[in-house]
Image (cartoon, rainbow over all chains, first blue to last red; front, side, top):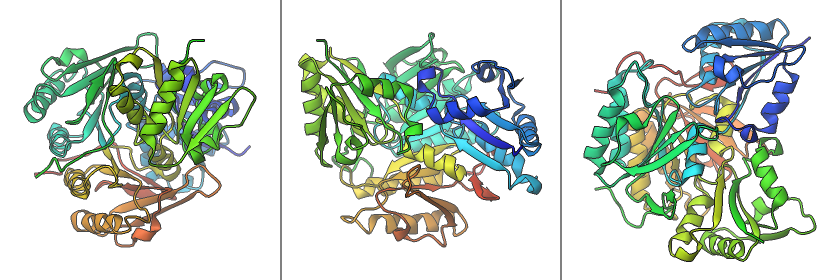
Length: 249
Length: 249
């Protein structure tokens, strides 16, 4: 049997947001590999082995998946959201880098609805103009780089989406980012906290930076900060498509 | 009949990338509204009226859609990709802004696979770390702001995705952006040109900035520029998840 490896995005949670392409790969797979809560979304069936592993073992998981595909298995590595956005696709290519003998394997990345776009859709259209996506976790990069990127994004009046804004192991990072944004963008800038989007626990709230508190976010929250033109209309928040005049010196 | 309005993303082209949520809305709709080539993707059926209009009439289209929903129609405004990324969702909210009597309408945004994520998946994982999405069209914003944002993104070592990189009406913008990137990021930085992703005309090419030419892009191309760590492994291009040391002063 000729094996293959797909790195697939399951979307933010609702099965109605899983693409038919991903569903087809899951239906053909012999092995599903991923972080425990994502693998738990896959229904067991005869002929399918579920390999669930804990967080922070991405490289082991990627190597195991490559090894199974090389041995003829049909392997789907599952990520929440989109596998290419702060998820497993980069880990698989990192694992592949040291393994020239695996580089001819049938490997495909299957995109999914990433959390920031599902969150933006629920809130309205806060990412309707130029925006940045920034992972606030400092597990894999220095906190100084996170701050430099937020400064650059705010300085150039980008809207921003933050992934992994806050965890128990680094409770202060997000508070510092909020303070920086307040200083650079002012108290009236809109910020949306979108927790567990498209799941039964979904909770979406838009407030101003003056009202924002770090504990409004946790690891299941995506945070979206508007640009200087972002505004509310009725129950929605949106960023206009146009900029009339230069806003930068 | 109680009307509603969905602003839905059809994904980049392949029907396998249309979410079940969007397919369900299309199946229930009485009216489809959108730009000609996107409406052309919807199969005609009895009871469904297709309202196709030309580019650059987004506000007229949004007002017409709101009016039909207010009159009891079940209206889907279709965008390519994701409706919240340089597409119709912001236009609908802009149209809604002046119309308080429509603000209680049943309006929902249904996310889709946006072009940059489909392109990234085909190329590997070039957006696997912090990135910016920038619309290079200067129809709705000054060219100086586009350049300022590209400078900010390159200066903070973001990966970048460019929408609408080039059109006949502004052939020089993209050439200037390429020259700026070459100056700031150096000749070896990787850049991916992804044209018509997931359609029969798909063409994906990754080159260095030294090799990049403006005419490698057109209006159907999404351009992805890696960050300083982006590299190739086999036929793929990816951006590592980790940054070992501060790369900024």
